[in-house]
Image (cartoon, rainbow, N blue to C red; front, side, top):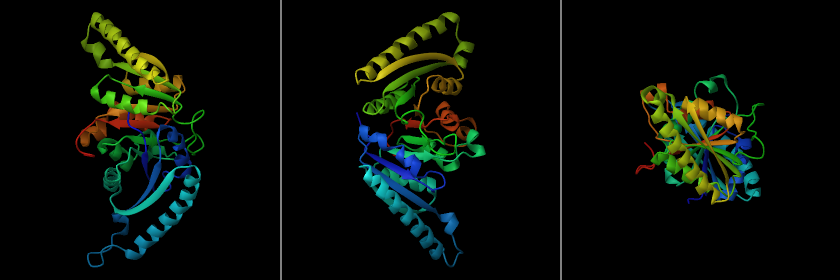
Length: 299
């Protein structure tokens, strides 16, 4: 069972700032040892003309501003007992975050927005959604609170987990991540949704058979989690997958949703999206998406 030892925390400061860092501290119970802060100077913001190249003065300004902010944060984080350091790089934010997450061999990438903006209900943001589609490393999507501040529901974000599964191999990888939270989480709801399309192509007998099989699989997962000391409860539902997952999270006051994701990219994914990406977009609580196991670190 892999530990969550190292987290990459990329930020533009207005998107993710210190309150969201503090929300990660409970992961010390899951092995957290180090947080790496990253600020990417967008090359398009500092691009000069063909003769001068980068605007060096602007680059140094951004670099100094980020360094001072990170050094201030590092004092607070160090006081919590977690090691920390920072990096300032130039490049395209999405690609640079992915590159560094692999180079540093982190176990989790923090992403999302701290503050609510009108587009949150429609689209998570270009860089954040790009990470969800391309990363081979789990991504923690921080969510804004009702007052625009990252405020956990109840005790902390990792206390009441909702794990959504379709019983696939990829969901199995996500389950292993949930198990890594055993030293932090107290209760885990395990939910499976029988999709709407199944009712259109299956007989009543087939649906009942699927229900019976799904209940057995849910019970087996709950038994695995119970062996780790987790209070695990199964939930079997039917309907639109992402809507049912979000409703279950609300009904049972989940503080975190964990799901697997295949990690696709391209126009089809942008417009249609997978159920996991829709949950990450629309959820009011943080979401961790665990990508499928593959040879490359990102796609």
